[in-house]
Amino acid sequence: MTPSALRLEVKDRVAYLTINRPEALNSVNAELHTALSRAFIDLGERRDINVIVLSGEGKAFCAGGDIEWMKQAVREPEGFEIVTWEAKRIVYSMLDCEIPIIGRINGDAVGLGATLALLCDITVMADHARIGDPHVRVGLNAADGGGFLWPQMIGFGKARELLLTGDLLGAAEAKQLGAIGNVVPAAELDAKVDAFVAKLRNGAVKAIRWTKAGYTIPLRQLAHGHMDAGTAYECLTNLTQDHHEAIEAFATKRKPAFAGR
Image (cartoon, rainbow, N blue to C red; front, side, top):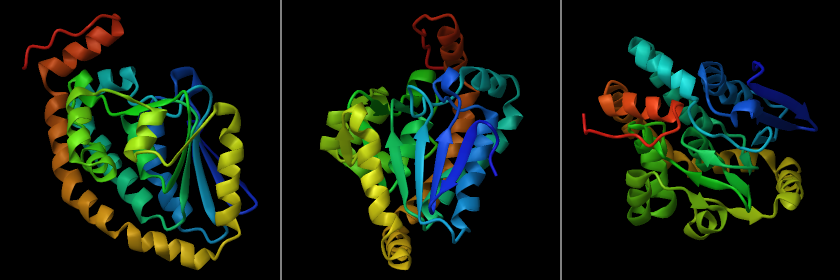
């Protein structure tokens, strides 16, 4: 079902879906983005799975967009049409999937990684990890779902601050604000996830699925009202000089000098 960038293992009615680019801190490239846009559609159709566990291989959960992929989008902006279509599929499919998704947040969840975490139904985060959406720091609009998810999860007051500054939250503060449900020491991460898995795997499957189908209705409505405009704005910011400058600055390990153009 999934290429090497996204590994799937099904065991005892549990689907373990692992972002598998540890050498790049599980940053998202074209292969991974495409895989994520299809994975939850495929899994959602199955009746031999009661729970999905989403995690990252290695140190990070997901470090956001891969810089080389961003460079390609600048060189070939027409390809962004595919990216925006896939971005909508990722958000819609995670919300449409009636199987509960547990986010095993083993490390930093940044940009799209933060969106993936917020879209999970239950989240368990290692206490050393951080989460946030720094799209603006690379000159892009926060369009992959963060623009509507953060205000819903933690309220508009703090969400506006975080989206405009791109600042990251530590695990403890993320839990306090309601972005993350559970924070544990890294050594206890698997035990906590396994406890949730046991409850859901052995629960009333149809009641659990349809409970999720019900409580996601408002989020699905928001997603369909937000994503078209959000991704269109991201296409525009992909063309700006500030975004190009941010990419070059990142590649040369310097602070970008934004000009507002």
